[in-house]
Length: 373
Ligand SMILES: NC(=O)c1ccc[n+]([C@@H]2O[C@H](COP(=O)([O-])OP(=O)(O)OC[C@H]3O[C@@H](n4cnc5c(N)ncnc54)[C@H](O)[C@@H]3O)[C@@H](O)[C@H]2O)c1
Image (tube, rainbow, N blue to C red; front, side, top):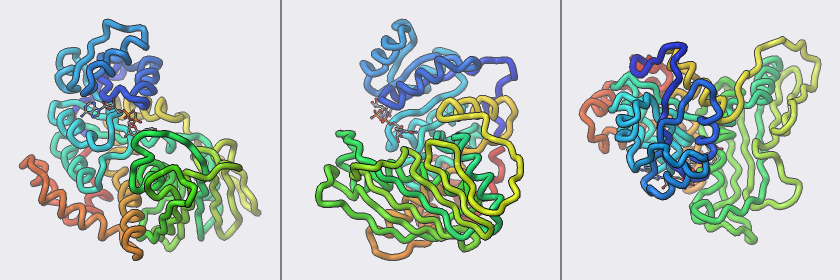
């Protein structure tokens, strides 16, 4: 990471792009952060950008339809991208090549192939691209991870997620709303808790008869993780009654005992375990992501969530969807190899294409992010 480093005392001026529901949450978080300045808001819908500025009580805040143009006009050094997943690739590529660091909402992109192109673009430009998986910064998740580490060898990790939200809009039209829009949070947290990467996925997805979603609102996926650990995610988005927290309900089972986390309260350890006193996350939610992003630009040290580190969470989603559609167990390496081939075929920027071509494999490039920091 050599690009938009900032001095320790400089506030970071950012342009927010995407003024929808999550963009408004980001607007308020940026405005509240002591060392970050909101330089402007961009949205392809100019009225959305203006109303987001008006609601903030700053009607004179610069607004526009293009993040890079707005950043150039306002002296911003970074972009916070809260656009729809399909726009993450074009918005991020334009920003990185304009010399701007990017903090992007999850998912990194709408496909693993485009996510790989973005990782290569970060290498080529030397700019930081961090993906905000806000739920990873939960201090209770950090505590749960510490407990998992104290349990000795781990056998299984499970997440149960049962809720009944009525969103309306695009989620109710998606083919795999639970897997694609929500489960990525849990998949990403599972990688973090276990410190292990995914090997394969077997998934059954279905839509209960009373569902108000068009696509599969329920799914059960068994992942093999490194070391032979099995991670099971089972959930539904049309499950009224006894709803779990938005983080889901978690159990990790190891040779010395188990730990449980309901997603809302402190996790609990069960077993004859010597507890180590380890550091907790000082961060939480999207405010935590923003703080970590600013710190990374100040220190030049790649943060958790840096694009290379994040892509495997999206690869878990794609593996689960592919398994649900084929009825077969899917290897994550096959998902990565296919995505690498698609990225090489579709990438138009010659330098990004050359960087992708240099990778011996996508897995090794993601594991050993040569040259990006
Ligand atoms: N971390 C979380 O808990 C969480 C929760 C909800 C949504 N999200 C993520 O946040 C992102 C936004 O979701 P949302 O619910 O706010 O969507 P939304 O549809 O409410 O808002 C998206 C906005 O982006 C704008 N936009 C689309 N393409 C653009 C482009 N090329 N340039 C500029 N603006 C563009 C749209 O006009 C719209 O105003 C998604 O990636 C979603 O997955 C994360």
